[in-house]
Image (tube, rainbow, N blue to C red; front, side, top):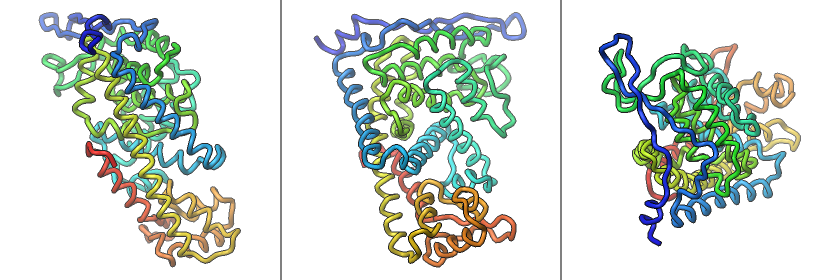
Length: 394
């Protein structure tokens, strides 16, 4: 059977529309009515070729997670996990055109950046961490908790929207918008149905996660931040369903390679076409492993070089500093004191050793809040970020 023939025999409910009033009685607009999907089987909607692609991508993610866990052990995965989650958060934000240099992001993570974008990406990292913490119980309150983490220290109110939103046109009216999500009175029921779908068992959890993401984006339950929370939801599902038990592969970095295809696939989903969004996530998952492996290899090489440039006692805090700098390239004396439980003189001595070795560079000169950055590490993040948007393999 040809793939086209296979697709013709199956279906997925498409979005319908209603015409609510818009403030004055004479102007109306078409708002989406999202169909219920709880109880539907994603796998039955896919052609054999796409099923094979998803299964391969899913297995590759699982193998990557397992191999690194076996190599380093669960207790020593901290730096690796942070590096991958940091890359996922930055890539997910970049899809929304929110970008920041690795240096600004490192500074924002310790509260020392003035970049508003860097703070937004850091909030996305918190939302991702929240998603993984709540992975075993993905419900509406968990989605709201992710959104609250994302909206922290912004002017936007977190939580489910109580107003109209629209996509693709600015101004004070949804008239003429590219897509108008459901009326806010429909959001709670639509999310309840989505939560039931998320809790279903599937032979292809990655395909289920892709569809859940598309459904979430169609519901658009928040005023802002839907894309970032929706991609965090994917990782919560992959963790819950055992695809990636310990690590967060940067799937958003894979989506960045073809953002146009990703957006078009979301549009196709609303027309009842499941395969495009599932295929996008399969390709993104494959690429996410390539991105993660490349990033970890480069950072590992930088750390190995650092160790050859430092001469210190085996119990010196400097070695713990080197371990941490790959995932958290900005430090202060207070941060080292609190994280490594050492005195201020010991923290400053460890920092100075790395300064003398050319590993750390001071980026602020104030006496109270002196900050140092491992520029070789931030350069690795920036170089890999530049490569992420290219469609070729690493």
